[in-house]
Image (cartoon, rainbow, N blue to C red; front, top):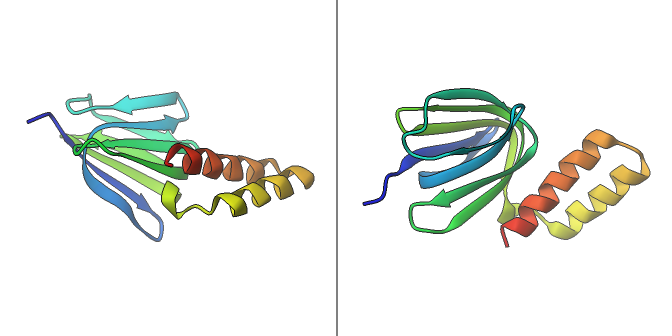
Length: 125
């Protein structure tokens, strides 16, 4: 059996995804990080960006994450996000409209959120 780590992706309002994985890639304030079973303990701050989870079954789960923390110890990875949504929950057309509106209003924060949602949605399809 391949080495696994237990992953819990939790948003402020709900558990978004939980299960066994072989690799998780997330964006932190120090840059992108990949976590595999046996990784050294870590605590970091999440930046807005897609989180990619390679499950033990061989599938890939992608989520748009906006802020929060990442913690890893004893083969347990916790992603505690302010906001998180799975790629298949994202309405691409609506995200494109939000991106266009944010650009027109010169709202860089809203533009970044919409861009992350679009990248996660298209990566997860």
